[in-house]
Image (cartoon, rainbow, N blue to C red; front, top):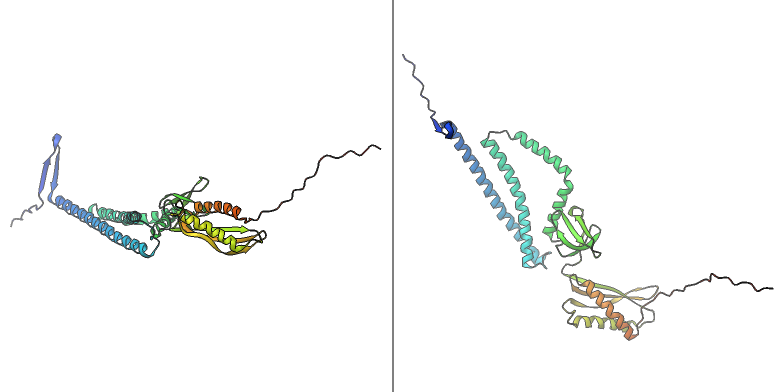
Length: 317
C-alpha cells in the first residue's frame, strides 16, 4: 500500500523586484499581516473615538460649569468673549491630558498585538520611571495643577491687580505654571503657581474708596461731614468722574479719637481698578474745600533747639 503524498496547503508567491531581486511571500504570512493591520486599524479607530467622546464630554462639563458661574458664581463680571476664552482653555487642557494617556495606551496595545512584544516589563519600567520623574518634578506638577484651579475658579486673569505670595502688582502674563506681575516701581515678579495659597484680587467687579480724614479737636464735626459729603457728591456728578464712581464717597462714622485729632472714615464705591485715581482726586479736592471753609488738618508741632558753636572771650581785667 502506497503512502499518500502530503499536499502543501500553503501557497507561495514570488514577486520580482527591480535590479534582479525577488520577494517570496506565503499565504500564512499574508494572513498574519492582514490580521495585524486589522488590529492596528481597530485600535486606532477606537482611540480616535475615545478622544472624540472625551472632547464632547469635557466641552459639556466646562460649559455647564461656566454657565453656573456666570449666573451665581465668580464669572458674573466676565463678558461672553472672556467666558469663551476660559472655556476653550479648560477644554484644551483636559483634552490634551486625556489624549496623551489614550495615545500611550493605544501604542502599547499595538506593540503587543502587531509585533508580539511583551509589554509587561515596559509597563513596569514606565511605572518606575514615572515615580522617579514624579518625585523629581513634584513642584512642577503642583504648579500646573494650581494654575489649572486658578483658571477654572477664575481667581484672577491678565490685567487684574492682585496680591499673591507676598507681592502685589498687575498681572501681565498668566500660564498654568507661573504668574507674572509688575508692581508700581516697574519691577517684574515671576511667581510659580504652586506658591500661591491666598490670591487677593484688588480689581474684581468694584472697589472701595477707603479714606481716613483727620481734623483738629474743636472742629464742628457736622460741618466737616457736610463739607466732605459735598465734595463726594460733586465728584459723582462731575462728567469727568461720574462714569467711574458707583457710590459717592461720604463720611460713614467717626473712626478714632487720636493724639492729634479726630479721624473721620470716608467710604465710597467705584469701578474696579479706579480706587487709586478717584482717591487721589478726592484728597486733592478736600484740601481745597477745607481751606475754603476754615477746617484745619492736624499738624505735628516741632521745636528745634540750636546751640551756638562760638564761645565769647572773657573781658580783659
